[in-house]
Image (cartoon, rainbow, N blue to C red):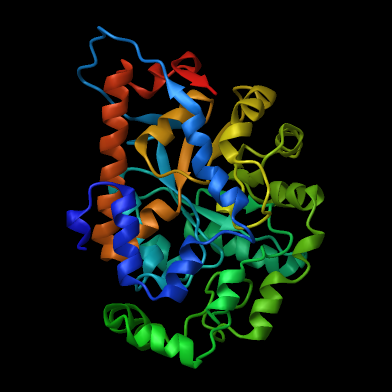
Length: 386
């Protein structure tokens, strides 16, 4: 299925499945353990129904939203996703450029295969934020934060919900791991998907060698992904606490977010330690299985922190209607991860642009049918819960 013949994110999902080896698709798609939270992230949207106004002039609709003095062309951005280079060559460059041209923010993952400096240069003029997996080693963490600052990233998004890596058993079934190991199942899987083999894997090898995390705390240009580099990347992450957030706040003069918040008291703690906002998130169902969905705690967190703090949300968004429901419940902006990665896997940068356009079209249609001319017209009473 060609990405141009897809008409919603689910179509792109099927196109991505066809193009990617199973090991890569499962890495993109899967959740932790029994996928309880992963499933809940989608099911929760069905529990909220719209109550539209009728006989409203909705001509001249706009999706623009204001955030920190900037105007964005849609109420969603692109969430950070690690190892996006598994799905397309120079993936984060493609994602960042597509976001820039759409007038929406892009959050680059620490676990990117593209150096943050290259992404910033390629997407010059866009709104770039950097997602940080914080290390307890403050010297090396400080060097990475300085790289992000020097490259012009406008915000740090500190992830707090992965003290340890989630238990993603599908990777074990597929015998797929980071660091990458060649074995018969992965070789056969790659050979059965020649477009991916030649267009992604071999192209990456020729361009930059064996895939590696370019935005961990290793010096730029150092070794490929190895057991040692992965261990260093994950080292002492289970010791991170609010004092580390305060340490970042004292040294980072730009906007600061805490990602992975699912409780109002944690959102208030982030506020006390100087964060400008939070990401209500369960890591796309990939961390703690059995956690609540982001959407079901959004209104509680919004009410707790008040209007002064920005509240973002991710995890489970596939439709424009999903985005509008989150806005009605108090989100300032929604961030999508898998939705645009399906487009990336199916069609590279043009596929990402297509995914963004699909979501924007659905949001516009939803606004019109709700009786809204703008995002500001969306109100909580337009939703009814189960």
